[in-house]
Image 1 (cartoon, rainbow, N blue to C red):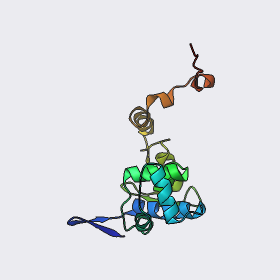
Image 2 (image 1 turned 30 degrees about the horizontal axis):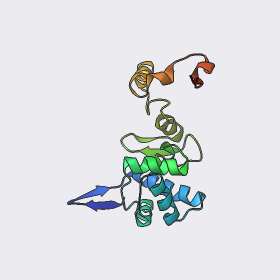
Image 3 (image 1 turned 90 degrees about the vertical axis):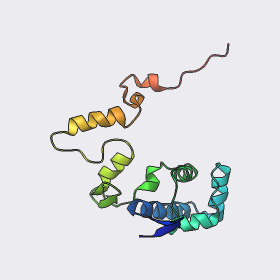
Image 4 (image 1 turned 135 degrees about the horizontal axis):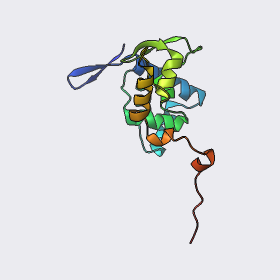
Length: 158
């Protein structure tokens, strides 16, 4: 694992940091962008990162902050979870989630996309899902109502 020096302590880039590094490189390559072009797009989005910083991020030599991760997701046109988790070929492929251990990819993606907790305990799954819905996301996401009511209302000009 790569380490980064910041002040007197080294910051270790773990499995999630390695996934972020690989995903930045993959998405930049798929978009056909140089590090300089990506740097310019990030600056236009209000989060300047020099091309050399992007190169260091892709090598996991530089930690990606939460703000940078979100700006990268916006510029790439993906959700933040697309940067956080490694790609896998199958939902049962094992992937490492920092703090969560090794889990099937499908479960990790459902968790990262806010659909469910990372793990559900046998015998407590209903309670854990209820807590996830109560504490993990805004309550308005769970309102079960007429689909037409979720459409933006036209505002009158008066």
